[in-house]
Image (cartoon, rainbow, N blue to C red; front, side, top):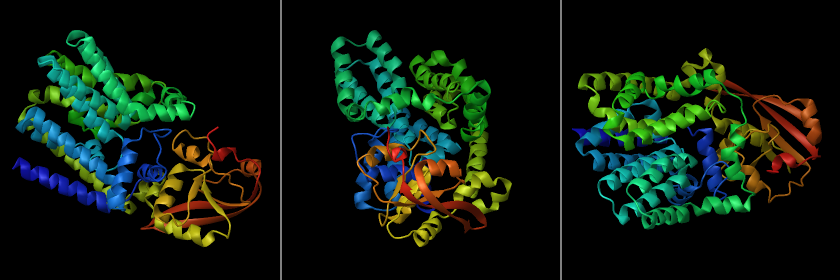
Length: 452
């Protein structure tokens, strides 16, 4: 019966990966895959490399989402290997949480990170019981590929250092260090080539925003009442803390990301999914302390919330009037592409001040034209564009800039001699979004095209 449920689950997420629209971040990763590099400004390269690989064979929406589905399957196999029949149940139970469910097929760096982080935790548990050189090599593989997935993989290092001190020796630590360094070397090659921009961005640049305890609650903790589920979130943390002595490795594997990102959230408001990395080890730690009735009720609640999100994604027009600012992103970017191509004049370069607009229009243009990022917003995300644009001259005199917000005339005049504005409305299933198309001539300042 459990195997049947597992099969149904993977059929469902594969089907949803086909019918649900591509998000801005997914389109951004796809764009990055067309400009392969050792790494990228705001992300390590593994997910982007995989998109490029699968695009060779599939060249459609599945090529973007298949990496997340594959790593979801790897998580399932790890749970099954780790916990046997309980692993299958825990996988299905936790997959009912909206954040975990949608992360099972939407492309992100979080799903491979989750797998490699859990795999490293599992290996550390094996080392604690039976210390072998082979395990330290596997630990190096897990950490190296995890670091190539997403930088928070470093949060497993306190446990690695602890186990090195408690169980390991210098030779075993060298096995781990050399293996993980060689695998993660592309990140540092890119850093060396680009003035360490990807490293300084993660350590400093992305944390320039101001925050406070209230924002930590609003951006990190409270959303997880819905995204992880109220029962899993409240009772799950309570049970994990109550039973921490049961397995200190699992407890600290889960607690370190939650504590770290909560503290980091005081400086940077952050995002709810930051905490999910910690909930996976904690779920393994305390699942035996849940009664069957409690688990059923929690799964029913989470499944209900997940279904609500699915209805919103499939029928956003039903909810648009309640919050237009959120649902305006659910327009058909194919329609916007067609309007842009109609408006584009001969010789104009297509640009936007939004990296998500650039990415989504590039995805739908299928390389017939190409959009470029003109970073007058001075944003800090999606800036990998600027690192391959630095090889281009942008010497043409005419540009067509697409923006979802009106740009001040003084701002435009800082960069161009003159402009002509046309406003269009994209209407899709009763959702309307306004776009501003600026015909610009004679560029005066090219700096927003480049990273420095």
